[in-house]
Length: 474
Picture 1 (cartoon, rainbow, N blue to C red):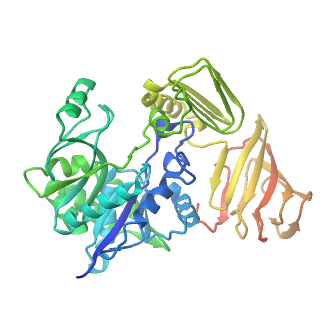
Picture 2 (tube, helix red, strand yellow):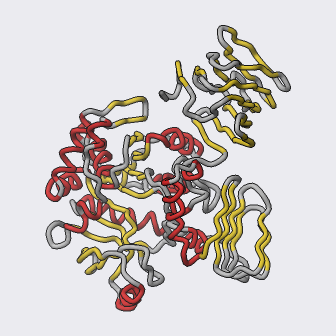
Picture 3 (cartoon, helix red, strand yellow):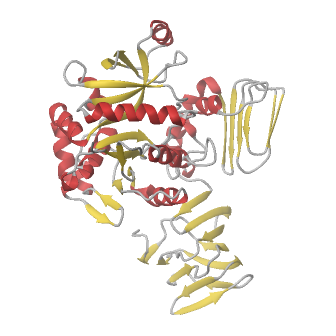
């Protein structure tokens, strides 16, 4: 008996605004360690690796994500020793239906037609064995030509999820997020499951369903795919062409139209699933003390109940709080009722309207070559701590409005400063005048750390003119 070809697809393009200030546009929740010792994205990739058995031939994952997160994707996969089949980079967000379509077109390249196992990058599962078995059952259904969805067995009347009404293994209908009374009725009568946003189907079956219900999305995605560019593992659909693709979810584009029309089935999943969509969900899956309090980092919690404290950079003390979330980062603190934790996105929206940097980046910003931490700033100065990975380098660049002074803290620095290239070691320094072409590189085998002192009339990150860049940035 021939094995079934399976192509895992990880949707990694979410922004996770309801987990601000830990999750930000530049480093969203799927790349955070919120449960266990690895990020949610790494956990998703590892779970899918476990699908392989005698009947299933499971390929390396295809990741669909944001252009800005491409090096985060590669770095985090390599940390868990997983090499992706491809990373499909969306130039703009167009929701999940176009994202899945890109993955299907990739899977159909070369005449293959694998079963796509599609999951988000930002979910948790506590029972991996049950998750794996449910997915194997779903793959068997999909191999017969069915569109298959995973339905989570509910354990409470949840109003934050859409529901699937199932008649045995058949999907009878999809139901929008209910109010509390309706959710309680669903739980009492049975046959209703949370829609987890996990789908299993052959690539050709998805394309045929999309052609039937949303031929406009199918056609415009094909046009963007034809205009794609490839760079090692990165595949970029045509930017102008993909920008013209209608924005729509998998559910609205196809799934909700299928019951009674196409063969759509549901596989129940009871595996301790949680999508960590808000801080209340993080509290639910966290380890708690006898009073129901959960804490991460340097936190002291007294005379409090059912409270979550997440400290990242300093001591946080909490006294006399019930059902509250406190999240501390170096540049922002959130205090919210657990019940209202879904509304954190309103703060993020306001930050966006006011064009404040706290919406997008942390104080510590990850880059493909390492990271920088903005430890102090004023009207005409900024101080950064910079780490460069072994063998990595920043772009060859210059600035119109600032000069820089670099002091090596540890490691070895290769510095291009105008027409000179010099080597600096611990406690040595150099000065980069305004307008001077320069580059910082780490030729050693250990991380390089420096302190950078910037001075000038404008210190924004957009005052960078790049002449050469290893990472394809402009």
